[in-house]
Image (tube, rainbow, N blue to C red; front, side):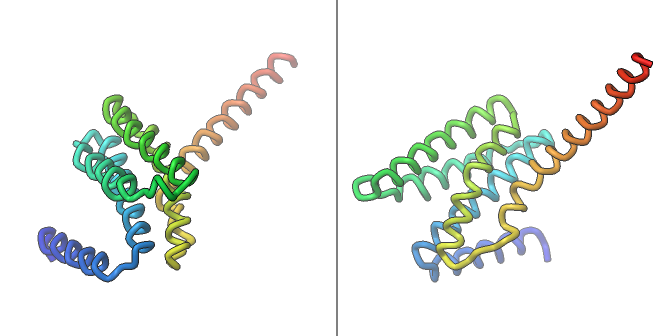
Length: 165
């Protein structure tokens, strides 16, 4: 299958999914697409490729797919808190693009993963592996840092022991 055919098929499949989805499922889909765009943009940024399209789509999903749908009159504190998160995320994505800082994008991803998981569960689509797709790179980085720290402290201790002997 050519790339163009694949994209056409994927677009038609999304269109069908959206047309038949319940409102709670639509919100879950928006969060999934948002995280996909953030993740793709982060990878593009790391590779030095143009990430503007991915981040533009992410910001559009935040503003038109999530923020615009908030019921600020009846939603109370939850709606206010979500509006604050959405506003922060949009600004953080722009700052990350300007600084070309993928870790800032990972911070936005980290903020949205628990929200996406909650909506997926509410929609009856709980997926135990969902968070791992987006948070695994952070855990891998932490393990690498931890291994380096242990290695450095062990060699430091060895040097200290040798010096005191």
